Length: 143
Length: 143
Length: 143
Image (cartoon, rainbow over all chains, first blue to last red):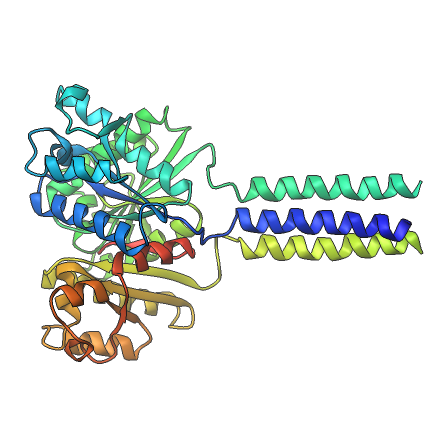
């Protein structure tokens, strides 16, 4: 009886340990990556969108990877509704790519949410969003 | 008695496990981020300084975030005492932003510490500093 | 006897816990870093190679650091056998720097493996390679 009690304890702890190891596993099944766009260069914008779209396809679809694009500083223009890539930005958002605009940059240049391409959401501060994502285990790529 | 002994073991281990989970928590209360400056472009320098300053303010002050700027390769010019942004660099350092110059780059171009803007310190090798910071859990941003 | 059994269980678990903590240690002895090259600019290519070479030397040799260069998008030209830095790329590979070409980019531009400088290997998708490396704990630097 005592031995069986000890065995239960051991088993219970073994499961807890296994859970703990899984929780801190550096290779989660679902990949997560944040892309930073901070310049006013259409080439960078297209590169970011192509990377986001292709990563989604090559990872096996939007259920297998979370991709977030953070537009900030002069890069905010990418996600405006007058942007040369506005349609592609909105389509990316429809396809599950998170497109985020830096609220701090928006307030500096006097943009309200109506200036954004459809599907784009704001975050309080783009650079801190990128820091927080990395702290949560997301990878970072600057296209 | 035996049951109570087993309970003690279980409790002790539960606390240890909890500590272990907390120790590997990916979201520490204090944010930490290292910014890389490796080009000789005043626009990049100003962008790095603005990001550093604004992140400090928006994170809730210098007690809430550690920001480090690493200047290396052609970017070393940013932190020289003749740099166009030398005053801003020194003010950032006074405000708790860590500004670091790559010692390897300095030796290649024959700079001693007297060439640096006030408040700037050297690290042996900028790129390894950036690697080590990330290994310590700091986020990385290339402005 | 029972007490000794419990002690064994405790000890066994303590060792397991220690192993778990070590496994999730954020500062491994061997540094690991992935460098991203995604533009068609010889200055970036040389910068990436210089960083890789210098990090290897300054970290204490190739046994002390793993450095990987991922060439993708327009940056794929860096690792072609007609590249202006092809010899340096191959020498880096000989010296233990992992040089990887994005297979997706290669198929878009119709390159087979015979187009690559000697020592360069392909990965299915460069950006996902960079995401996966970061998930495995590698640092990231964009030269």
